[in-house]
Structure formats: C-alpha cells, structure tokens
Length: 281
Image 1 (cartoon, rainbow, N blue to C red):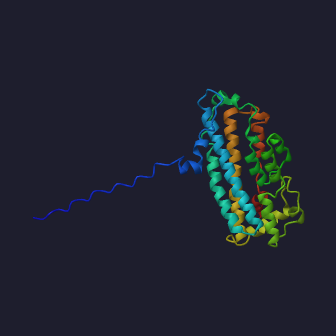
Image 2 (spheres, helix red, strand yellow; image 1 turned 120 degrees about the vertical axis):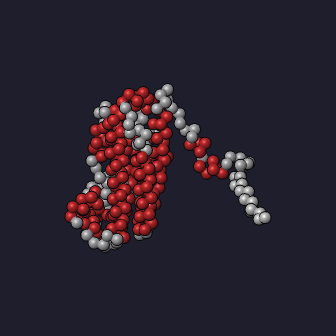
Image 3 (cartoon, rainbow, N blue to C red; image 1 turned 30 degrees about the vertical axis):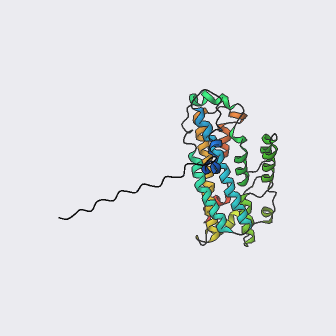
C-alpha cells in the first residue's frame, strides 16, 4: 500500500524587527512625525485640512524640483550634458506629480473655498520662497519678488543668491556658445538678475539643431527642456482653472489680482525659442 507524501507545512515568513531602543530607523530618516504634525488648521471647516496638506505637499515638490534643476545647471556648467538631461527627466516626473496636486483642489466651489478662505488672511501662493526659486531657475527673475521675504533673513539671502545666479536656461545657452553655436555675446554676458528676453539669434541656433540629427546630444537636451516647459505651462493653467472655479474674478489672497494675474502668467512660455524655432524647421 503506497503512502501519499504529506504536504510540507508552509514556513512562516520572518517577523520584521519591531523592538528599537529609540524611534524607528524609518522615523529617523523620513521624519514622518514632524511632517504629520505640521498641520494647524485655523477654521472649523473640515475642507481646510486638504487645502493645507495639499499646499504643504506642493512645497515639498518645489524643493525636489529646485534640487533637480540646480543639479542640471551645475552639470551644464561642467559640460556633463547626460547628467543634466537625467536630472531634467527626473524633474519631468516630479512636475507630473506636482501638477496632480491640483486634483484635490480643482473642483472647489466658491462656497467651499469661502468657508475657510478668511483663515488664509494675507497669505498667498506667490509668497512661496521655494516656488520663487523655481521661477528664478526658469529665467523669470524679478528683484521685487524678494521684498515679501525681508523679514526672514535666511530665506531672503537664498533668494538673493538665486536672483544673481545664471538660470537653467542661461547655463544651456552658455553651453551652446562653448560648443561653437552662434549665441550672441549680449546673451552670454547679460545681467542674469533680469528676466530673460527672447533672441532671434538663439531661435536660429535651435532651428539649426532641430533641423539636424534628432538623436544628437543637444537636440535631446532641447527636448528635455521642452518637456519641462510644457509641464510648467500646464501647472500655470491648472492653477488658473482651479482659482477661476473657486473664486471667479475676485481679488486674490494677499492682494494679488487673482485670476487676472494667473491669466497673464499662463500666456508665457519658458525657454521661448525652443517653441518658436519649431515654426522654422
């Protein structure tokens, strides 16, 4: 009489290490307890919590994106284009996540927003120092945007430093000049603390690059920059739509022009010649 083989008892998975002398290594690294206790709502409306947390999440994404663009700018100064492109590609995925942050806020009705809007007081997104550093890296320089931060010396010093450093696009154009492309001296040596203005000569350089080998290193750099520019445009438009839906044409928080201000911003493209050159290829 044959004996059937008895099934072996399934081995139990190992129990993770649960006993630590102090806080967990996860907490030590992520600082989750700090992050999850930063929310101090100022109204009784339950919807304020999602507004506050979403805004804080946006600030964290701003921080990551600034890191990526500063990494890319440094790599371009050192002629390490692949490193710069890799950082730009990472920032594209991060911009996609940032833009998705509008989802929880994108369908606010005026009544819902008004239920806690007064809690914001004079607070407004344009006062975000990290977002301003993003804008400066995109070439949207303005010394007046340092004024709101005079009361925070460290933040003001960081912004002043960013104001006087070349933008990401400045570093791109300097790289093109070093590679022998006809970038005007007036562009290479411009006052980088001022907003960048489009140049016909720069447009011609991009036209020539896009008329050549699409797989060439500089053409791939141009496409990585265009991906970034497109998502910045989408961010501005999503901000505009969310604001228009929540408050119409009323004056914005912090005394800004609200929708009118955002409409003006949404009409502008960063890295402008990368867009206009396409008409000539």
